[in-house]
Length: 131
Ligand SMILES: [Mg+2]
Image (cartoon, rainbow, N blue to C red):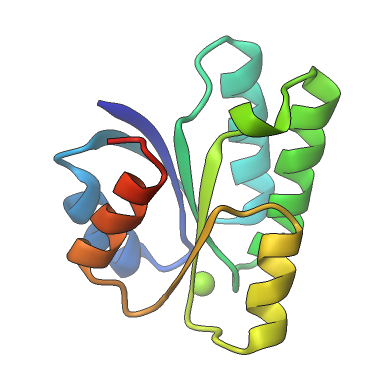
């Protein structure tokens, strides 16, 4: 089973994500970017890093764009090589090209536009060779 961090400020959408991911992983939920970055860091430092993060963009405290940047910085500072980074799938209703391009530029592996279908989500995870 994968160790998955679901970052989503909307509780209803979090529940859907947990249900869709239940057959491939154990999920942990964080509701904003700041607490997600803290959780990511503490998991990494306790040698139990996440295999996958689904990261919403529009969230309070710290948005998904900022959280993505911080997570990649933490990995770089920790000495992880780029190929071994935790896989990150952005999950957002935002579908403008600039945001999508910027997300890939900042280092996400995949980008899914809401509403997210289970088949698409699992296909992305397969594409990332996690399952
Ligand atoms: Mg949101």
